[in-house]
Length: 123
Image 1 (cartoon, rainbow, N blue to C red):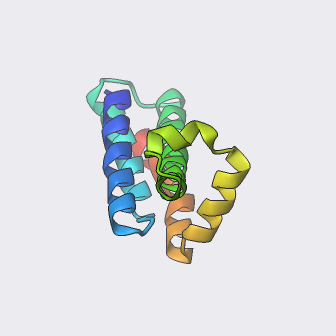
Image 2: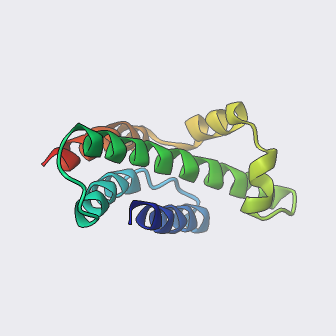
């Protein structure tokens, strides 16, 4: 359930960001809650494994979205779809573009999301 929910959220967040031209960092908080919720619905027992898995899933979703959005913007300038541009993008370049594109509020939300996931998954 976690993989399916995470994939759906990554697609929704990436689509929103590419369509609007904004990063929508607040979606990271939803990603954190979604990861904890999916693990609960999947029947995983509370504890450190569930907490760490929710935290890791949240970080992975944030990284995927940042990569897809950067690839979408740069790929569009080269006539490529985001999935075609993704393998051509290096991690350093994605990091640079993400730092430039995210506002202070976006960065705050991205930083708080793993903490929220850990907190929500422990209960």
